[in-house]
Length: 38
Image 1 (tube, rainbow, N blue to C red):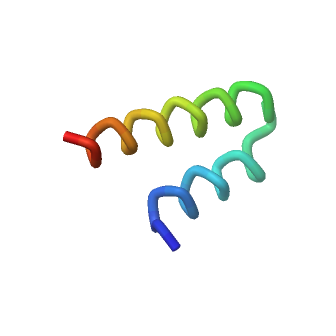
Image 2 (cartoon, rainbow, N blue to C red):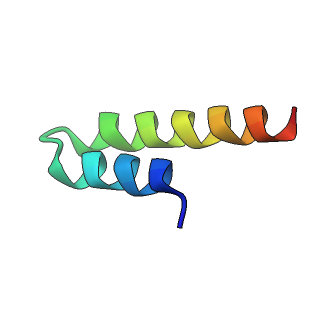
C-alpha cells in the first residue's frame, strides 16, 4: 500500500472536519498521480 495514501486516509479519519479532509485527500491523490505520470 502507498504510505502517502495511508497517511491521508489516517488524516481523514482523525480530522474533525471530514469534508475538508476528504478534499485534501482527493487533492493529494491527484497530485501524487500527476507526479507519477511525469
